Length: 389
Ligand SMILES: Cc1ncc(COP(=O)(O)O)c(C=O)c1O
Image 1 (cartoon, rainbow, N blue to C red):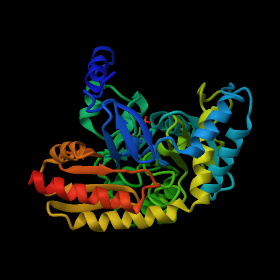
Image 2 (image 1 turned 45 degrees about the vertical axis):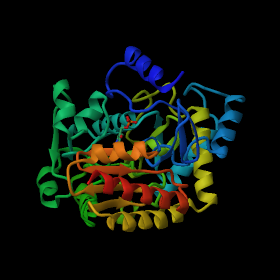
Image 3 (image 1 turned 180 degrees about the horizontal axis):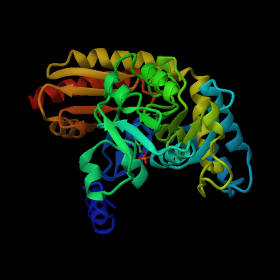
Image 4 (image 1 turned 90 degrees about the vertical axis):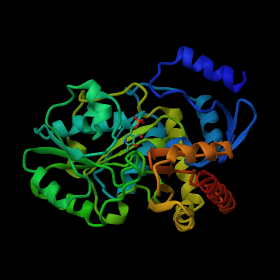
């Protein structure tokens, strides 16, 4: 089937939650994807920060193919080696010897698990950030600080208060001894790659220590090496009570995790939560292959170098007002409100990005992006910016 036919059939048979897709993709290798008409694109969005080793990475293909032929699924009545090995890897990344993991499939579910965990403190009040994105299920949507996404589905969870992101004084006013959890993204991704002040996370840690509120860091978009560290908060030197992960965790397969540290690791009791596919042998095999490849090839050093290169080169392009982010999660703020036009121009030129806001382009390429691919992206970006202006 060609692109037009696939896109028509999509609209006929798939609910219109996303709007019409712009492309129909059929294959990929590394950072290159091909559409149903045979046109190739340089993928600088990576499934929105998900395909962290690009498309069809041999290490993931091998691990998944092997695992599906050995043991494709087991219920959570039984353990299996992959889920144990992955949990041990993730808990060791936190540096907390008490840490324990709950596995699910999506970012929203990881955050749902965090909400339920926080209820086990005996408190129910939640503080979250204006503009934040934490998912679309009813609990996760209650945390999401974007009125347009929330309002059609009111009433949501009671007792959720949204405060301005990055504002320490507002945080101090909002969080108290009745607060069950304070949830924030280390960098707000969907809101346009917003980086908080350098002392924000440590101030949040201090306040949560004083009040007994759980500090939950949603690393769904900023986790698994995306910022040059395993978790997007590591630059701050703190340990949160809860970390949520998804997107890159499964290297492109649906896997998420809610990691609880310290005393929070002991809040859930048998029967408190569950998920049929959580910690599935195949998705955990993909995750282990991804993590081992990143470790063995020192991918995170390259993420830091390439991130700096991209940010400094993008900042010099006329029409770019500001470049924000960390590692390979980058928001490009344009001097005029035309990010759609720029994204469309890039797609025409064979490059995939996305528009986080009307004036912000977001890029989140695979962590294995090469210098040559960065050069090609920068050249195309410069040309499209020139054409659009
Ligand atoms: C920070 C953050 N949290 C949660 C989610 C929700 O993840 P999912 O779409 O897998 O439910 C997202 C998705 O973009 C996200 O960026």
